[in-house]
Length: 326
Image (cartoon, rainbow, N blue to C red):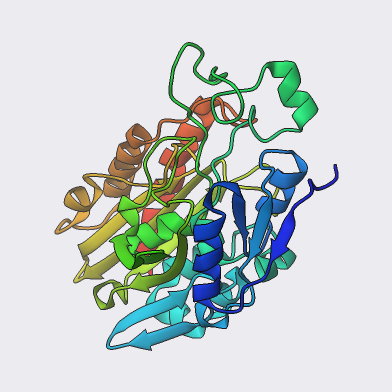
């Protein structure tokens, strides 16, 4: 599958990038690592007139600590996240999630910002143009039918990024820059829970930085991921857990899931169910049940929704036990 014709733009500054986005907002796609966009271009899921290659904007790279908080550039590679000694010591759930993404070669290319903005995926959507023509297309691309939930008017394509659930557990915020300057919002407010319009990002904006608060430093964490192959594959279910224990009791806890809903989601009520209680296997099992009820997988992948929901329950219990034993 060849790439469609487009004009490649290579800005060297953030202003050059935002100017290009403002000029070509309705006919442009942003490429950073390219690990998701390039296959999508080959499948004709996108056919932009312009592709904005932002890799040359050096100010969007790096991991920096400032006044207790941490700032990570959106172009920081997943490999850099994985191998950061600072993040491993203070925000381990993020490094645990980053090291599960794809393969080492793809992590060398893929960026944190790209993983946050990863397009939602579906068994019916992520196919060649010929295949999609044979199926009559879908709500997310060129059609008006959802093959996952026939008769429905909502797209149920699943969000399948690995690092966003870890970032949600850390109360991360992101910076978005557009024609009107920068704005900052909690990552939990970035996602819409709608498969075909999954993020609150205008066509003339881009994600530039991620902020981790000092209050989240020191949380012990783990990330567990279900996939068919042991590497390369996107998650078909993923669980991130971050917690702090004092004298055998849980003092602070956050749990988030991915790949089983149109957005990564915090498990509501998990913190209240954990905090202040003596830590044991029964408590971990209770949290697993809560996470499974939060998961709403449909037939968006090769595995059944029932199996993926069950694995959310199993992985949550395992991740809670692993985080509690650290």
